[in-house]
Length: 236
Image (cartoon, rainbow, N blue to C red; front, side, top):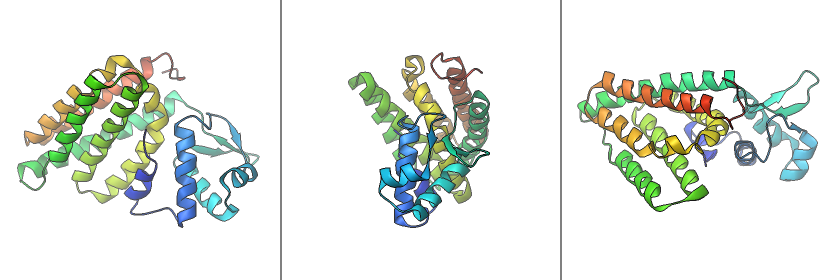
């Protein structure tokens, strides 16, 4: 599963104080994992009781969740979990394609200059390959999904572009609900390590255009899987 604390770290620390950061991460987790379902109505009163915190840190957490599009404030000021929508999914994936394509381009340039090392990325790929072979069922699905997320976050981090890293952290979190559906598509799941290996080989070639093309192709294939999965709740 995606760890919501990745987003707060990408922003250079926590969101507000430690209580609001915890509330943000806990609510993000519940939304991503479906404990708070799409379109489910929520109230500050119920969340204050459930989380055992005061309104001030809760409101700060809700503000951040609204900015990420995970929670919506309706016209009558009530709150609800944002629905899953094919139009939003396509927008998010296209944004991801541009951001991660740029990151792959920049990392390939840095590799050619000898400015960065890719051992950590290779280690993630090896761990994915081991999971593909040794794990089964939901444990296999969840592990491969988490490792894929780690691979992409690490590659973006290697680019050294701090603003891009922050934007990418929020994007990963906004996409997580959709990606958990896609993670259960066994057809793509069986090719995750091969796809990531192709990206990293392109990066290590030192050819920025080749690296960007490989990353974009990988993400476009993911979009096709999202929009053809009958269980994803979208209609693209």
